[in-house]
Length: 135
Image (cartoon, rainbow, N blue to C red; front, side, top):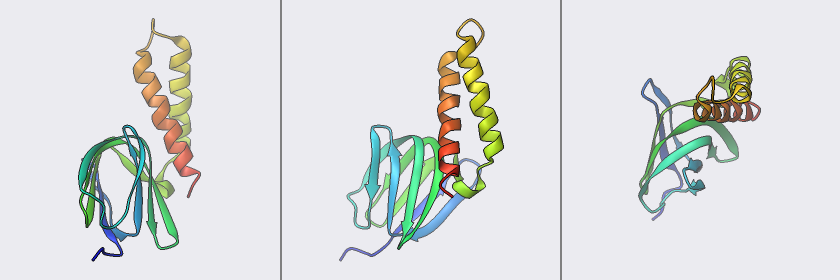
């Protein structure tokens, strides 16, 4: 019999960010978003920059993540993330400053900055701003 809920743990090197039984989870896989429901087939996958959407009944919670791995089992999902922030905990002014700084570095170009690194910083900042707007 398939359970009604699945245990989700979101962990970073600094802290346990989230630990609850949930109805469903949407994660930013490195190849695109995917959903996980109770009784899901087990697998292990890498995560990209994006949004983690957690549903408990009709309630949804959102987290910004910058990558990591997800270990999906039939009754539990462990997300081991580089970073993960709940939407309501995102410092919007700090994310906006990061976005501006990354855009400035991209405009200045390769002679002064590592463009690949600046592009990743911009993606992280834009993701945080988008997730913060969902709270």
